[in-house]
Length: 271
Picture 1 (cartoon, rainbow, N blue to C red):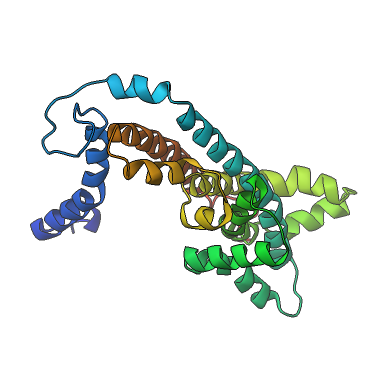
Picture 2: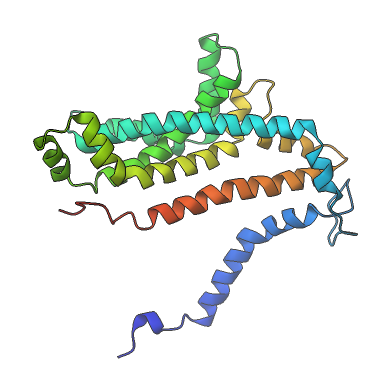
């Protein structure tokens, strides 16, 4: 009897899968193509010519570096906050039982389920009500709201795979809470936290809607790109920057995939 794994997919299914992939990725390839075009005021297809000059132009633009630096700083600090709060929330929800646990879990993941514009309006209203001036830290707080969810989802799934008997054995052998966390819990959830942190960084780096409501006069890299698109000159610079954004966000996502694909291999899991 022939194995199902060796059965070839129908031709129609292959065509549909190829069309879906083309629909998703051809626009990204166009971004890469227009980064090399010689036309600087419009997007012609095919491009009238190809050049590398826009990479040098982009490299020498101080506004690009300023926006890039702001995005990296915001993403790094938002991710650090999310790692702390997301891990603590996941530990509380997965390792203990208390009244309202499921409600708290729902409230933690709610910000990423809501439309970004709702979150942005809510944060702007809250900052205005508290008379908090818009600054670097208001952007960080805005991004942290959804970064926490990403870390929480990864951490809580891994916590539930860690056997409670390992923690009990550690305590029975005389380890305190910090030692148990360092030598038992952290090695088992470390890859999940790293993956969650990578995804959180990628989401923060290219966030637009929440940033629009919380940034004030500052421009992160995605906001800078939107502003550049309405200008009639040097539009290929925007495509060069877009290539950087694609690479910066793709690498963490790829790393998170490889870190979590074997997440079921956890010490004591299933016991």
